[in-house]
Length: 220
Image (tube, rainbow, N blue to C red; front, side, top):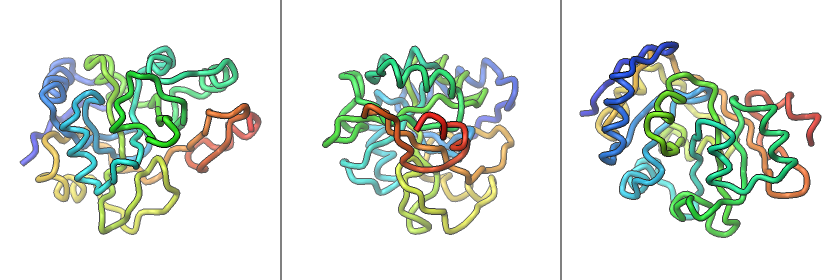
C-alpha cells in the first residue's frame, strides 16, 4: 500500500516535503496533484522509477514523457530555448502549458521522443509542486493519472477525453497498490489538460488546446 502524505495546498509543510523528497530520491513513484490533472511521477533521473511509470501507464518506450521544472532558468538546463521561445515562455509560466523543445543531453533517452530528440516540459502554477521541485533539485515526471483500460492517453500528448471522472478518494483507491507515495493536498482532480505548444520551429504551434490556450493565440 502507498504511503499517504497530507500536505497543505497553500503552505506546504517543510517536513512533509522533505519526507516526499527522500522517497523520490529512493526511487519512489508517486501520485500527486498539479495545476491541471492529477499525475503519476518520479524523479527524472531515477531510471527504474521512470520504467515503472511507463509500466503503470502501459506506455511504449517511444512515447515521450512530460516533466516538471521549477522555473524558466531550470528549463534551459534540459532544453534548447530560442530567443523567441524564451520571450513567449517567460510571459506564460508558471501555468498550464507544456512546451515541446529540443532536449539537451541531460534528458534521459527513456523520457524524450527518440525520433525528434525533443522533450515536453512544464512549469506548474502549483505551490506544492514548486516546493517539491525546489527540494528535490531534479525535474519530476508528470503523466496523467488516468489508466488503461479507462483510456489510453498520456495527458500531455493526446487530446482524448477521459472516459470516467473519478473523485480524489476513488483515484487514491485505484492507484494505492500501483504507486509508493500519494500526495494528498485535499484537492479534487481537475480533468482539464494543459495546452501543448511545439517550440521546435521558427514559429510556435499549438499542438493541443487546453487550459489557457486563448492567451497564446497572439503568438501563433
